Image (cartoon, rainbow, N blue to C red; front, side, top):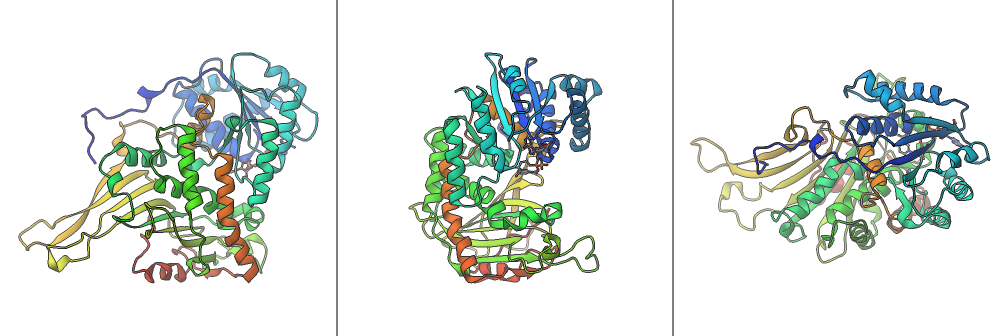
Length: 498
Ligand code: NAP
């Protein structure tokens, strides 16, 4: 895709500092804070988005002073910033904004000090719950008790948001006791990805696609989120959850909503989330034979380092799925008759997240030898190499007659943006949205409940049938039944490539 002007867009020219803020990270010493939240904040600081008065306060039970926490943060930034280059002076300036308080979410320790620290007026107050969901209620209750849950406060909650409809409802109810829905930011980091927002820009900022975006012109849509890693050290947690709860109920369904929703009247939080909710409510129940579950096997000759799923989770009889592929329909005027295929798995052949819109064939081919072979395919890559590709059909160059070939119109974001511009990580964007008070890219309570309302009967069906996932080879594209699911419909999955 070509750009309209010669000037290439830059990231830095668009950085607008946010309001002064205090961000408390409960779980500031944890894995997520060290890998994503703190390095992300540092990058926003380097980009000039954090105003000079901003403060970041790490909070966890571990006894540590601010100096100790700053050392930990510096190490985390060095370890998890990848190729991002920065100076020691920048790092020191960022560390000067950071403080630490030892706090117990379930006790009284540290709360009076935090309340004192947060007593400055006129600043955005945000509390990131980067702790186990079992502590969300305790944190909310204590924030209120200590006078920090006023109308201007915002809380950010991590996934998983419940493990079924009942627990999600209970969690929503608990949080609603202390905070209004407009103060609650439920994170799904997939929504913070550049390409996901570009999906909305492509759909609603161009005249080209929207008229074709329906069952009349779209043959089917595929969403694949493939990982090469196994469960790693998260085996015990993962085995209680599985691919349906861990990936489909949140990330894949969010992507499905964005690709299928009606154009919202405005790009504002409730207008967008109302439309997403309508998609979830219009999803058909999934038939048992339209779902394939799988468990990865050990890597041959490398069982010690790459054990099979059951060994990795320490349960030789585990029935939890590490792979899922399913077909569903959306019962509304726009999509009736167009199948949506969703697929996600661990230990697959490549790490790749992609949404593919496969258009129908032309109604009549004037090039008889090529009849039915060519279709436009719009592919939106979330990772790696975020970008959008549109497959178009052209004449094969040369004098060999009228033969057609498919070529990609490719827009890689890394190339489209000015050289040297840094892409913004999902967490960076989402944290800045919290400070700006923009909930568009966060899940609303009713959306989360509706998503569980769709997945619960599927999971209950497996439990009732004692369904056992099919084994699949590590490094493959899942169980062969998944290929069959498509082949039965005369279709095929797009190849999973890095
Ligand atoms: P983690 O590494 O186990 O860290 C948990 C944090 O909570 C630690 O800082 C811990 O510090 C603190 N903590 C535990 N009990 C506490 C208490 N009673 N009071 C105050 N602080 C307490 O977990 P994580 O991986 O960072 O995950 C945090 C949240 O993010 C979870 O909800 C998880 O599901 C979600 N999440 C994580 C990832 C990821 O990639 N890690 C991805 C998506 C979602 P102390 O022991 O010092 O108190």
